[in-house]
Length: 49
Image (cartoon, rainbow, N blue to C red):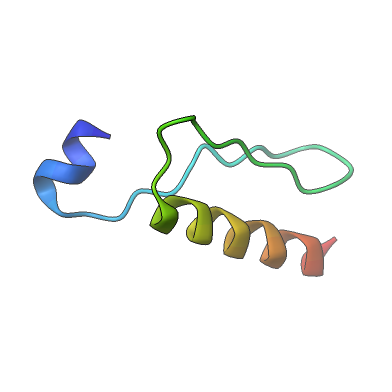
């Protein structure tokens, strides 16, 4: 998170793989942008499964 914010980069994750259904994890300190990105990735994973 510190590197992400200092480098002004977008980091998405952790992304959990190998499960029957798409599941991802958010920290309690997640920003709105983090939540939106994680929901988007989870939706894409749901379409693929």
